[in-house]
Image (cartoon, rainbow, N blue to C red; front, side):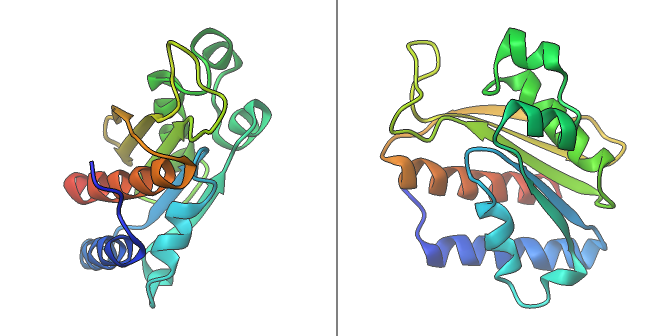
Length: 164
């Protein structure tokens, strides 16, 4: 998979913003491994205040629980990098915002933190529309920390486009 550069990420964000604005939708992001990079990318688009509601960067277990409503049991049994955590993050982002569309990401960007079961580059991304069912996908990205995070941002934006 190619690592998206700044220009491609900007193009994806611009196109997404146009779709969100036309549909009168508002976006919320819930980010762990990207640390707010998705929110930064979409708010780089002039006029994003008409379609971007807020972004939550929740790295710790405590923040995922307090800000996004992720259950302690989910984190203890599945870990932060899991399908269930991503789904609870995306659902919680909608509950705790005024947005109509959400994306959540949780993963291991590296260089450390990986395990045999969840190596560096393992990322779960979840998308959801208010009132709809969440959809989550597992990705295994290659490259260094920057490459994993860039690929995560790109796939998060592409997934939002598909959702719309």
